[in-house]
Amino acid sequence: MTVPISTETARHYNWGTACDGWHLLAQPHLSVIQERVPPGQREVMHHHATSYQFFYILRGDATIVIGGECTALREGEGLEVPPGTRHQFRNDSDGDVLFLVISAPPSHGDRVVTEETSTPGANP
Image (cartoon, rainbow, N blue to C red; front, side, top):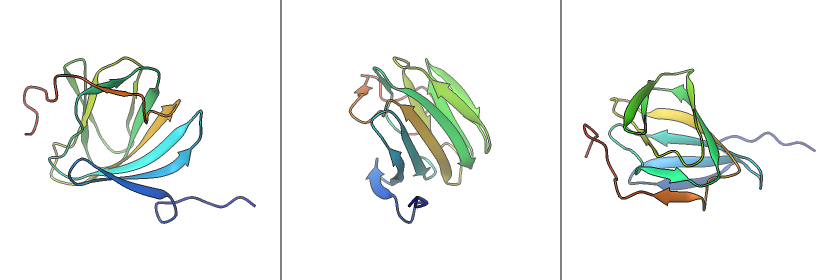
């Protein structure tokens, strides 16, 4: 029997100081995670050795920094991040950002934090 998955039933985890994640799909070849990032929060600058990622904004406005360039994403927009590409997800807005991050293969255990943990103009 196929059972629907939601944030009510998915495995939940916290990251950063106030962010949430829900593993909607955790397979050896594919990961789908829904995350919530409150205003002013961000992840550290990093890259993945083998994982392709796709960020898709469900609600709110986000910024993704790729190679020192900031790209604004609004609700209904997405962006691919190829393996080896330094990036950082940020919420510079005044409301929560809710988004999907789809990784193939899964990115957990594949993350390499770079020495640079922020970008000029980034929130502290």
